[in-house]
Amino acid sequence: MKLPRLPFSLALAAALAAPGCSWVPLTEAGAEVRVVDAVTARDCTRVGRVTANTRGRVVGLPRVEEKQAEELQALARNEAARLRANAVVPVSDIEEGRQQFDALVCEQP
Image 1 (tube, rainbow, N blue to C red):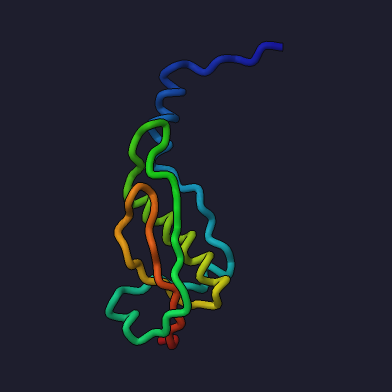
Image 2: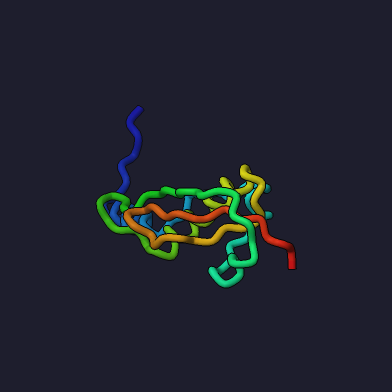
């Protein structure tokens, strides 16, 4: 049985849309971890550092930075939950799909 072929325009549209897609699910534990700014982080205790990695390019095209940031934050929050942290703060810029975060324990507001 021969499978139908996708029209070239449909395949191209899917490839162009992929750089904007987000594929990282936030775990239940990760959902309890919040992203804070540097000012808020000063009142917290650092319990570790998390390096999050995602794809910076898909099909040779650079991904939308907002989507990369969402994925990196989700990955950092998921990992910070394993460290029993309740917050993360970015400590580097996004570079080639990679970003570092400090995992923190903060008093809840």
